[in-house]
Image (cartoon, rainbow, N blue to C red; front, top):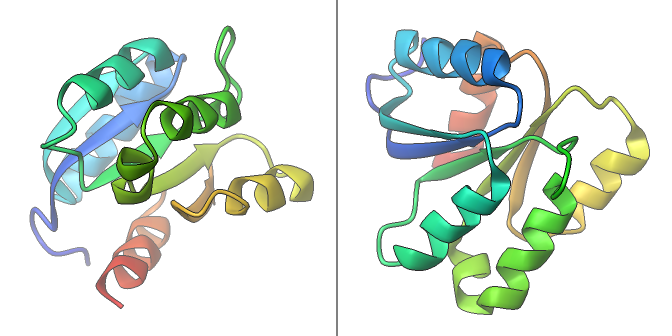
Length: 134
C-alpha cells in the first residue's frame, strides 16, 4: 500500500481526457500525491513548468503519443528551454506504447525515472515509490 500523500504535487500530461480522469482518480484513491494537476495540452504543461520553475512537481507523468507535441518532443523542449529545469524534473512515462524502441528512447533522457505502460496500477505506483525512495 502506498503511503498517504507520498508526493506533494504531480503533473499528469495526456491529450486523452478519459485517461487523465482515470489516472487522476487512481492517484487520488491511492493517496500518492497531495495535489494532482492535469494537462490535456503538453504546451500548457511546458508553459506551467517554465513559468513556475521554483515549484516543480515531485513527478511529471507524461504520455508519449500526443498530437502536435509528443512526449519525446516535450522532453526535448524542456531541455532546450532550461537544462537546469530539465535536470530537476523527474519524469515517469505513462503510455499505451509497449515498444522497446520507445522504452529505450525514453530512458535516453536522463530525467526519465520510470516507463510504465497504461493503465496505471497499484504495483506501478508502489514500484515508482520504491524508485523514488532509493
